Length: 511
Image (cartoon, rainbow, N blue to C red; front, side, top):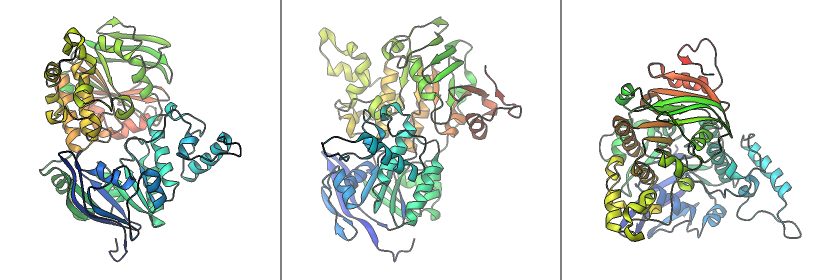
């Protein structure tokens, strides 16, 4: 990047504290027009606070932010957009109960002469905007809550782009996308017009693909600002973590030790978004589930725990037929879901971390119907070591935690229920390499103890390295089952794309 190009965005000694926690400490950096700068750091490093300052959600405690040569201090997100800064948030800011079109024009959609929102006009304009940015598979009239997470992520990104910002902030924007090239192409296009992009991601291949330089935060401080091409992966991880940490996934040794006893058996399952799905998950096994966005993965997991109705088929738990009409009924039978979107489906934001973890078993800490906080704490502390969640986070409101620590809390809650079978839906989405390793370790230890895991991931390398077998869904049915010795990203992607013929000798076709 030509350093003679003037800075469009500049942080000058920005400091932000939350109580005793220093979120940002004397952070300074510049972002130039037409530049893509990566922002890296482990969960809790200060990235989210920096994004909130840029977006007008919080104000710095001290220091200054300058935008296009002027002091920048937005009062809210709308103010930030008006100044030229748009953010596509990792934790989506869409309103689920409104249509795609209504969300596109929030907070002030156009109204007609009698004060009503003209739905058809908004839908037409929203369709034109979506098409402009290469999205033709979303109905503008659809309610956001009916859409899969990947499509909601696209809406979030397009809504940020439609304001034609001077600075575009993309916070883990690819985490839920099955087609990252769509995003990469958009970034290339807007950068060519002079837009500056701050790109937050835990995926180094994305940073190397898009970014000329990166800024690395650790414990709220900037520890590195360097050209990406000059840095090895090991150097980047070392700067992020303060120690050597290579992003590697060991082959799961537990996969070869699966027992013969079936933990969960599904026969000819049919329901909303799934058709004729059959499989068996044995004790001590991690069974993968893969598929492109919208091919039935989410619907399968929800049907298994009673969040979606079962039309036909049989679910057997340890060989016994089970009727499951709610997640609570599933938990009583030893089956617990960790959902794909922790913000709206997994967390209670007005409660402490400790309360979020203990909720399913709070009766154990409530003699005489009064919660005994000391007993509750002892219960929670039985599972926090398994997910490497620091006990100092327990009394804090869970909304103050980083995304990785929030996910650890959700996993700890699943463990505390005593479930024998975990359904993990993309549990590492949007978390840093350190948190990923903690989650992998928890999964391995769980199956070593005789538990079983049904594991859906959008990161194919996780499935290849963590699973004993992998089911691949295509058009809401099982397209094939790939054995561990034949697992590869190419084969999974081939089956997920509908290529099913005699050349795939490593895939076991299922009826």
